[in-house]
Amino acid sequence: MRIFKFTKSLDFMKLKIPALVFSTFLVLGSLFSLFTQGLNLGLDFTGGTVIEVQFQQPADLLKVRGALAGNGFADAQVAYFGTSQDVMIRIAPRADLNQKAIGEQILTTLNTVAETPVTVRKVDVVGSSVGEELKEDGFLAVLAALVGILIYVAARFEWRFSVGAVASLLHDVIVTMGLFSVFQLEFDLTVLAAILALIGYSINDTIVVFDRIREMFRKMRDATVDETVNEAITSTLSRTTMTSLTTALTLIVLFFMGGAMIHGFATALLFGIAIGTYSSIYMASSIAVILGASREDLMPTVIEKEGEGTPSV
Image (tube, rainbow, N blue to C red):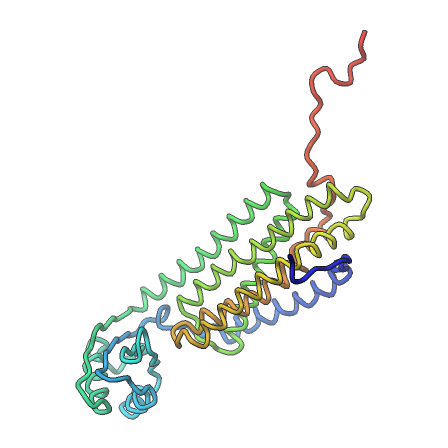
């Protein structure tokens, strides 16, 4: 039994032009911010030092941050990982300090606020060249995913639907990255992973809608293209709504209880799911319709058997 059931087809295609105009403004605004402000790249991409330490008692992050700021590390990122006794500290590259000696300086600083000696579990130094390589690999991963989806949708449906699907995915990726650029949220490897997960999530919704459009083209032979697409989107709306809500609930729990290390991942997916649901409903199908998608494009080709149509003697 469906919780949300729509007895009447909703007229989504009536708003296809306003929706595309709105999306165009979102994309242009996001690109403007990305080219002017850029992304606030995390240490995964810029390089720096990552130090993992263990306290004997639960660590007070406010005291830790205060001690680090008082000793010249005001830009240090401090967060729990695992338990409240395990703390991860990230230090951006510093030209005035020996990166390999930073671990000892941090340990000395932490021992001034800890009641018992602090243990250093790991010190990793990430070079800038590694960060550049990660940026390049991340861009190639997103590009490969989009190209693969373009080929898959074109083979399964038709090129107009393929263009609509990829344009919708590009819209989701650019607008989500634009959010991180506008608010200067940290963009690290977990956010990049969220972007890739968003591509998979969004294309799944889009494929479900396209499958239903093909099914409705076969059932509603006397309906217009807009009427058929409206009926297809309406019939999948309850599924789309429930999937988005249940996924969002999980991500909200991750955001508030998963710790600072997972905030970027949860933020990117939460916003991405919202914008991806919107684009699956309005963007992908609307672009296919505007490009001239029709019933004939998705109907199976009728192949005449040998001898058919030949008059008998």
